[in-house]
Image 1 (tube, rainbow, N blue to C red):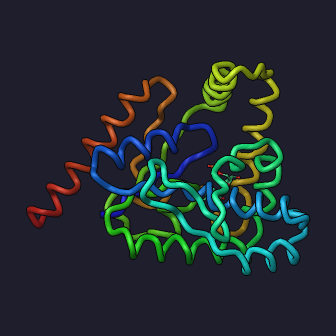
Image 2: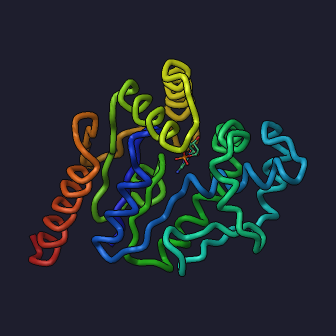
Length: 227
Ligand code: DC
């Protein structure tokens, strides 16, 4: 069983995917963490993430691995735990360059398919999981929310962690990232064929998880009965 959740930044994919995986007894793959891990390794190693050749060359030498014994799984880059770096502001700024590098995408898509082979019960979230990486997934979701709602959630999240943020600026960043994610040539963010579109703007986190869980259960029951 492979369940994919694609969608724009800030729609709540990671938290939803993690809880859904828990309820389904599956592993949870955060593919954004892989792009972030490469971005962090580039910055920390003095490679310009915006230089496609140098960043691509570096990425090919890296060994990315998740430690599945922890929840959420920690990301090890060349054996070093990079989890604490992944959400840092410099990494968030650089990751768009990494994610629009075709060489790096190709490498990470291959790595994600390999992980899919190793973990046959998987909930995988990202931008291209249902449209490209796992086209034959059992269920594909596209989790959406309006840009304004995503900006509101992000601002609240930052406030809760003691960071004061300007909601208008956050909204601008979200719109910028959407445009970049949707317009790149390789693995653009699209609604995958056959995906169930869920707009979470007016839903609570629990309602979203419940809705996705029910849809997966129905699909599994249908597959089991040969329907
Ligand atoms: O979901 P996130 O914010 O951790 O993703 C980080 C970046 O990686 C973001 O720019 C989108 C990109 N990404 C991608 O292009 N494809 C994926 N499968 C996952 C993330």
